[in-house]
Image 1 (tube, one colour):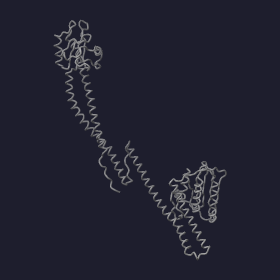
Image 2 (cartoon, helix red, strand yellow):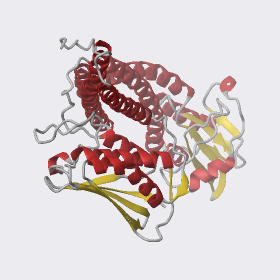
Image 3 (spheres, one colour):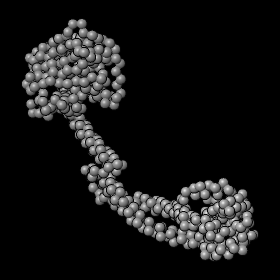
Length: 489
């Protein structure tokens, strides 16, 4: 057996590692995007909580509207100081309809002159943490967090203080900071997650692919002729299925190898049996023919007749052996198709026994037919059924001593007609009964002489299988044998 070749590289491991790395990179980028969105939301919520009351303080302590008009001389200084202290805040004064009446920002940067009062009223009615976003006068269409408070003069509503808490300048600063933050965050998350996940993932993948590599080594050993190689372990899932499937497949292959080896051995036995069985009648024929040729003028008519009868008997035996081989070869190759028809099997058995009567008389063997009354017709191939009777009777004659008896018993069975061929021969040992129907099998016992190639009973079994029935034997050494089968009605 050649040395097992090493498996070149753990390709599956590196493929999985590559895919895993790509997935980690993609997940890292997605995580950064999600983190940026949440950080923005968190910042806006925090800004709203911290500066949400700014407008109320301005409205309470500055009195920005007097006599229904903005007091610019007083309020601009205070509001300007507030915006200097917190540049992210932009303060506007609104009238009761939402029109902007005053502001402390460059006039050219203000794009709209009216604030949506529905959002303002909703903001005033909402609880802290549930306040909506409102209009941004400098950037229409982009909602901004804001703070608003009503202004009362002499108990009457005269306007509102409207403060945008996240100004354009703040957004510019945040964009610059976020770009730097995202770069650092990306690098930190990417390398940290990649290193940790790669270590965990590669160890996991190595353990998985190591099992696959070991499986590949076992498969390689099996391929190179180590048929005892099996995958060890009790893996679960797909690997467990692969392990059990391979082991079962290996068992089936080894079993098939054993069957092929046994078949080859049987064929060798057949060739030996054929050569022996065919050589015997050929040698007899050749010897008697040579004698006739050498003594053709010396032999009497009776001697010549005797020689010719021996030659004829040997030729008949040789013809029977060849025909038996041909019949089994066709059966084994599935070239025989039964031509079934209904017939009375008791009549067929009677005719066959009459054909064997002369042979039985010469050896003082008694032939009997025990058939029940009103047996149903069987549905089978007449010629093949006749072959079954002939082979069973030939087998009985081989092993039944002179003066014995052979009996065919026919009786009605639930599925058809039961047939038994019973003899008073030497019998079959229990340990041999399981093998007598195997092809080319002969009983290799000193007490059982070789009498043929051992395929007569195998032909019987094959024919009965074509009729979807089986045959069994009951026997004891020294007490004969009884072969039984049922022909379908």
